Image (cartoon, rainbow, N blue to C red):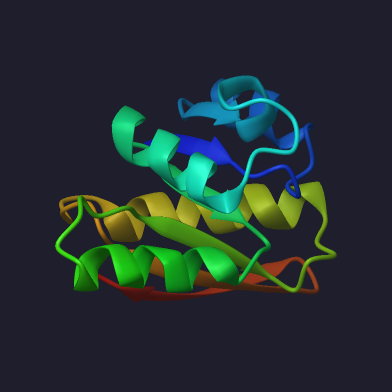
Length: 124
């Protein structure tokens, strides 16, 4: 799974994901520090990556893209924002399993609590 991690996701997530076979990169590397949500979204679409974020705005932006007939983007929203590294990795493992075989444009909300992840997954 190809992922673009928003600035608000801990940098330590990338090496752990890479070790588990994910193709993950931080938005600060791909887009520069302080890039707008629109710039991050455009980069994710261009590179065919799902955005991983704690920012709810990306769900709305991805939905609007679909409404305007633009190329879709997949999003993983991590909730709440304060999650351990292990919880985030666990959530992304589960999301990868759910997303397998689905076209780009899916949306996942990962609720992270007490070391567990509950994933709500919706494909387009």
